[in-house]
Image (cartoon, rainbow, N blue to C red; front, side):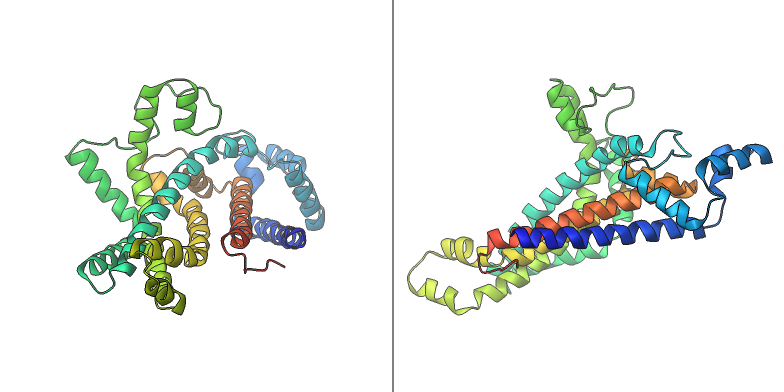
Length: 335
């Protein structure tokens, strides 16, 4: 176990160095002058030159890269052109909002995906199986941004059942920032009215995020379960008179968990990057909307920082997935 952790730590270090190098190179190759963006469109040549000198943009590329890596290790990503604040503060402010969406959507997609996938496998070839597979195909076929707009039109504009977007209603003061999770912060503050309001605002974006992940999970669980159900030890368990429910729950589903864990890790990573359009449509003040604004404003420092944060999140998720294999199946040798 220790050897595995050390190996993954070394591999992760090289991966992050590669990500830093790639983002640094792309930022220097993209059109536009960062100094001009920071100084402002009306700044004169002297002001732009002063900004270039302050940022070290006239230094050799190698010197700029070493300086950038040193700043990153200290958690200093520079200042955002949009907010005029340190980017690290922006990430700490906006990332929890995205994580709240992603965690809830990942949990819902996992629970429903495993249940429906297992149900389809148990009733393979029957109307239930056909219906569940139809749901999975539809969930994978419909673009999430289109689905988000349709849900907004139906549940807000037509029926008036759910709010348009945002994390709280218009004019509602948020609770004190503790975790950045609106639901948890509302509970900490003892504001159950804010908790209910926050949950209502989460329903549409979470549903849209969860549907594609749920569809993928359904297909993986169904395929994995069917493979396990056709193996000899399942037939042996049935011949011993073990109840079908116990066979499905304790033998079939448990032995089908490895691919489920793998796809859950991938889905969670994809949800983080896939939240951009959803946050824009639902006016959700998270990292996705911050990323879109940074790209439109050519805020290179913010783009580089976000890329690095998402890469770290992906790497951490994959590491936890690999680590969980040995707990799910003792036959898996991490070394």
